[in-house]
Image 1 (spheres, helix red, strand yellow):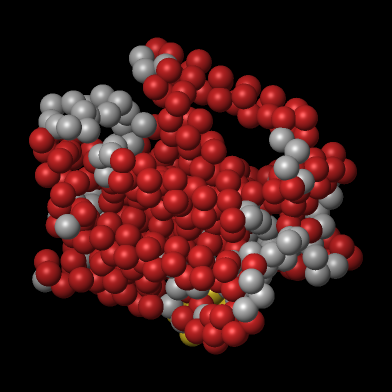
Image 2: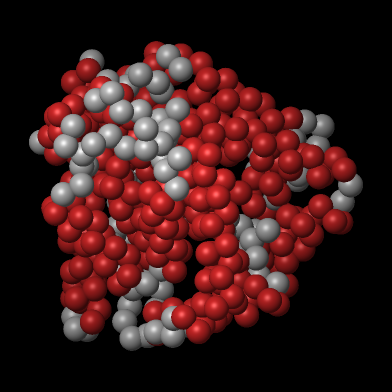
Length: 430
């Protein structure tokens, strides 16, 4: 059974970057190889769902709040399928006490998928820059149903994803996972640099900002190592972010970041049109809904799984280039707040905190900001992509935390040369 778990963990992580290989069931949602392997991995390890009762209780409480938001307000059929789909992809995160060999297999599988994805995206980039249509046609045949962004002067690669921004989110996760899972070395630093360059040529502002915030938080943690200065560290990061927002156009003027002008303009107008406006103003529908409705809607929202109709009714006139006009929100936090209100978002944040806190000690600020940045950059809550990437991340964190405790260093970071961590790294890499 353990060997089967290792195989399924490897395959689940390796297939994460290929959602377009799956059977389509909804927009940007497929029954993909990763989802099939992940579901089997969950079934094989279902007994471990009771190993960490704090994970289980937090998840059940969240599900209860989501259901309560609909009771007496919406028919069961309007939310139950979505809720089942959500917990189908979240459930692997509820597993506790996963064997180290299984976690290592998952990291190895993730690296295999990452290397293949980097190779595909590079080939796609070369095909776009050199206008080799045969390459692009071949990739579209292998990975159907995807969409490319098209900022001049080249077509943005998407590899096996539905769109470039999803590829960028995957690469941002890859940067953090590699940073956590392996001891610092020239090879790991070179690999992270390669991932960073790949995020740049994908051309996604979201992916770039996720990694930037993570790196800034890491530097902040190094500067303010003592716990009593954690708040100062956090506030310093927030102030730096505000300064960058205010003076961005003066600091950076390259073509890659010209989109920030669009973002700034969309934010100042409260615009919900285009990808920039839909993301930067994702909380506007939440505030509009709360202001137009009573206290019940403030605490319970529209009801889990039932915000699309209200969005279309309220913003449908904005057209197809508005996510809100299509009934979508490009921000998971905003989606949870709109659909389940204050009660739902509290339960959701509690689940995230419970799941990440114990394994993120010593790097809480960096991981916390990373998790928040991902939620602000991605809006498909029931998609397996983010949740399975979180699954790989928590396994990397667990391995790192275990190595730190074994070395007798429970602080910010164990020495990268500590023997237990060297063995753990070797186990992951080979």
